[in-house]
Length: 390
Image (cartoon, rainbow, N blue to C red; front, side, top):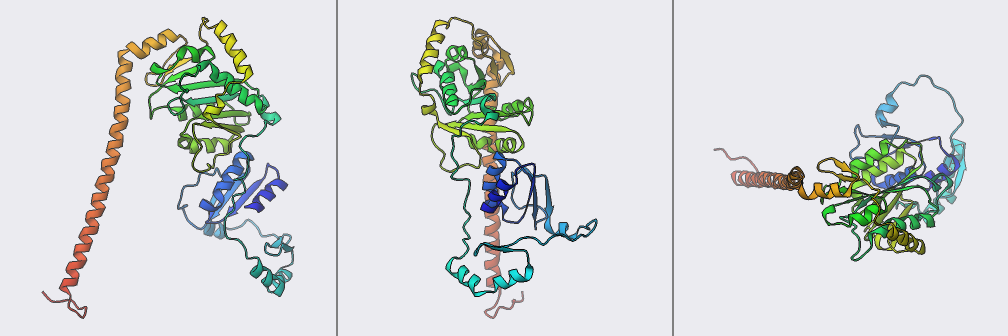
């Protein structure tokens, strides 16, 4: 993989890479996904299978079956300069085929391969990349969209919700990001400090567990942001893995950066390439600037909230916190919908469970029947292995 990194360093985009291998999945894909999220190249793939045996979430410009590619008729044949021939064991290269063959059969090469055998272990070259990068000029003033899963990452007990925005903005500015920040909080807002959140411009989306709807909102946000425009996405959740496929597609295809915050560090490193990561409780620590901001907020707390309130179940939107609270607490249609969707979710889970049980029983019965059939066949045959006549 290091040779690909070296080539990318010597050939900045626009450029095209092609990989011909059946070992992409599990060998090259992790590093390649992260590299493509940082710097996008056109990517061509070829493999021996008619259809890849596993799903590959790399964004490619073209893919081929290797045999079909070789059997395709070229428009014309032309002579080109001999390619570079390279021996990684000896760090030897040349452009003469005979000279290269002579090197491979030499005692020096054989000794080098014996003393320093080629390592078969795949080394992840991007694993050591840092997590919190200083903003580049392109992203320093880019807008930042934050999707906050309050169900997974709630406010600490006794925490003043007015501190969320200034704490986030202070953390961004420490890395050199000073663009406008939009925050959307997903929660059961019957039990959140709506007044405090909305007073700092945090939009509220009413949801329940398992139905946050973050993915659909990320897609809508993407549709409103041109692919070449620098922008920053941030997910605050312990379940970022639920959005990995969507996010990695967007990061490969667009000029976006990704921030992530979570209550605890993941057990394994993600193939998502982030520009900054935080632990949620540390991110909420108050800076001096936050304290000054809080004082201003308290002085104007009686002002009208400047956030948007939205109910995912009913597609109900309003700028009035009173109307929103009334909708959540007294609207009968909303109450019915709030009961129906979770019930549907759990019934779907139960259906999937029953389907798995049925499939297990079907497979188990098939195996049991096959075992009985073999035992009967063994009993009906004589000791010499010939069938007995009935």
